[in-house]
Image (cartoon, rainbow, N blue to C red; front, side, top):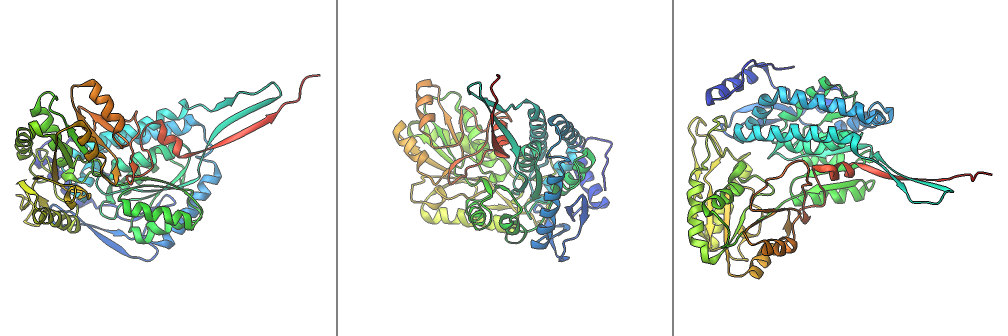
Length: 512
């Protein structure tokens, strides 16, 4: 099934009309195995809902171990055939560039599927599409620009260092940025020549299944890319334990990441690349310029995507000499970031992804009040016009007076909840920032270059944003340290993860 739309949606009404059109056409909800859309072997399905309205979007194939076994066998056969794994870099590049072009043609449809499926505003989803398309193009263009090595030897030897694809890669992606995270995983894995089995989150499977149609249209060889919707404890576990899977690439919670490493050890010692949770500190020093701008960025760092962001700047550390003035500016910025109908391009925030996450966030807010934190803004569930009173919306929430002992200041909430700490010295700021199990991202706002260099070196984080929050592109790696994981998405470094090094040492016959 394909969808073609003559006009570009711009207004709220345009997006509503496109949503009605997609629903009328029917949404593909079957698994994609061996280049064919099929029901799960068991016949089981699960319901995917629109969290903004409570309406059923589709009954999706619920794959389990039988489907995983079939998909792994297909992926292995495709890899061994060499149709993709031994194709030239130029051939792989051409196919992936066609895929990126097709994603661009269908970007509004793909963005809408993510918005309907997990509740994010379409404006945010369109930003995700730009990132996803850019990622595929970046890795496509990188394939024929990565060289091997020749080792330094004497005349009687030749040492070569080559990169080869791993084989079968299982990519397990989260629900908060469904298609963008998919692109971050499958772009480098496919570029390196692997066969890929994608397991999208059961909370947001629809865009992955639409992408499968586009990969077929782009010309990926049969069996090289497959999509298995389903649950982590069924099909996800089966892929993680499979002796036929060579690599697991995962983005999600730290708890699940730990399980996947155990499954790898229980099976074939497959490579496991993890991008897990975060509780990212955002440090604001009194010497920073333009407090209004910094406050707007600090609010956006936590309220973007309803706070359902692994690198959300959820811990705001502010020098006490400007703390009250700055917090007031953050509160003013948050007033302009209220949730609304996700299909309205003017909405900054949308709905929480499902009832479980919605209740989790409300429980943390209640706990914060009970722990003695000062609730400065928000904290309430909302009804949004056009959502039939069924939507899962929460106000942007700000807590001040946070201490080290409070759960809301230490645990990942994954919602629109900002916790504010104060500090007096640079040393105290660094200590507070590093006092976390996580190390995914950190922000630093200052005009003092000496301080910037001192603090960035001391922050235990995979990435540090100086005088910005998350202003980065495909040229730099994304990933964390400590319990935020060990993998890297984006840049040439992710391509390296999806290949093995092979050393070839030749003994040469001397001339006589």
